[in-house]
Length: 191
Image 1 (tube, rainbow, N blue to C red):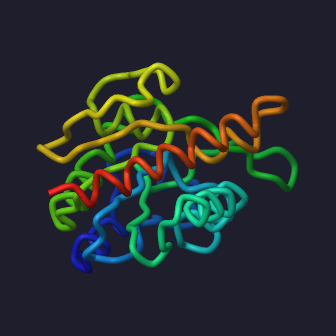
Image 2: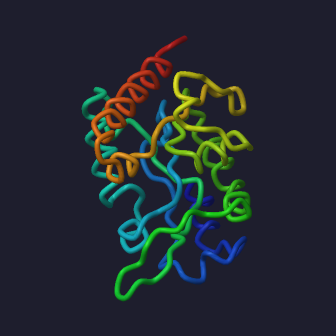
């Protein structure tokens, strides 16, 4: 895993590296039964070099707590390893990675999953699902299904940033995310 992370730091597979502060590789338990895959690093992740340390990360860690999952027992990463954004004054606003950028980073997520040998993968949002499944799937309609990615059960759920963007539906989306994390925990315990 250390060799993968080092190699990723020099990745030039797509133009995103040019405007990002750094590559943000996955972190967590190398023996994790559950791997959480998000879309891409956000502004804080890009600045700090760690996944899920910004506002969406705080939502994710809170949902993990509510699901009864120890944060130290998971591995968290992103489908895309560099932050795609557009400047707005002093702020850097998130931009969704395109298909070519997701595809360029796909070997990294494949290598991470191969090295981890987890029991279940959770795709957080549509971009992560597209990267893992190789096709676009609607998140709401895919919840409850179990897909196989290299024979590893994979579930699709909302990205924690959806909780932050939602108004009236925020509580419902958060509850769905927690329920899906509980399901991932149950799958990870199946023999």
